[in-house]
Length: 403
Image (cartoon, rainbow, N blue to C red; front, side, top):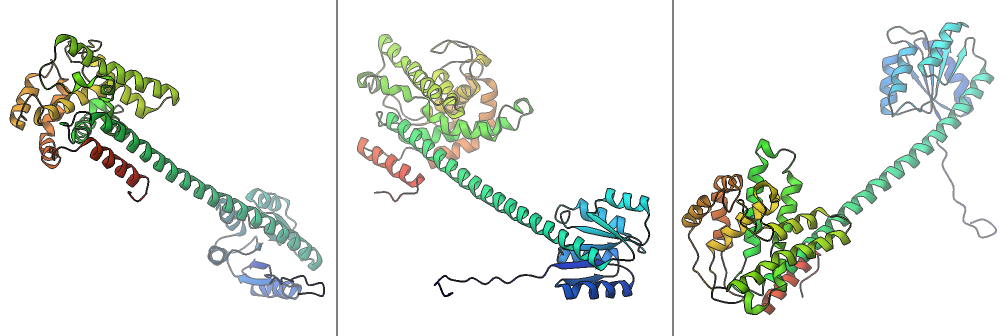
């Protein structure tokens, strides 16, 4: 504290370091005698290679560099330092033995900041060094600011990435929960959505290995398909319970109403996609909701699309959805074994299903069997139990402790 009560902070000033590069010992000693009494730390180097090693270990504030040295001369040393991003800002004063115009010009072209000719004027030398020290201090400060900005940028980018991942997970969990709540109106469906999206992921992963789908099916496509496929039947929220939950066969009129769920779901997701300004997740979900009941031969609904006119995600979901419907119990039927389901799918290749999607299923059928065994129906849950399960899953994704 001073007399006025103000805290006094003492700073320790680091002496500027001057690296002197010269192959003559007497010159090194001369520079030490000239500069050390002026408050500089003088570090000697008797050649270019030695100088580069010292600079790499402990960069100096200024370099006094002799031009004519055996081995690596001053030009080469200077050019190497100026090519290196970590050393290019260190001021270099070239020392020449003669007033050689061409040598001085080449020195400037090689990147030196200044040059002096022998015999050295001590006053001029100190003035040049003092100017270079100030320049180096300013450069160091700029580099520190740049480093700080870069560090802050990286921290900010990491936070943005973490936040983006968190938001995406929350969105995915929310949409999946809504899809499950819509599905929960039919208590027989059980783990249908989870099984189905794993089936379609297996098909997509298989097709991604085919050269035909290079640039079409990539990791982003597979991930988006996995998270958007549960939206396929979200339009069923608009179907009356009397039709949706009817245990027997639907009449023609009732089936016509049931078929509108594709349009209801597709229109809903189309509006959501437009509101979001375009979103690959919702866009793919929209196509799946609209077209997963289209058939490869054009006999499906709602628009009777034919073959490749049906969006690829909808063609994949059509098979995954059908496989799960056939291998699980429904009010109107017992579950089919895998072998019978496989036979039905093979017979429907080119009619109901895209033959390439069928081939991908065949290549991955062991995965299908494993998924069905792991996630087979686990018994019925009440509507409240299903709602509570979705809330708990959403809280888990958001990092909250389930209530």
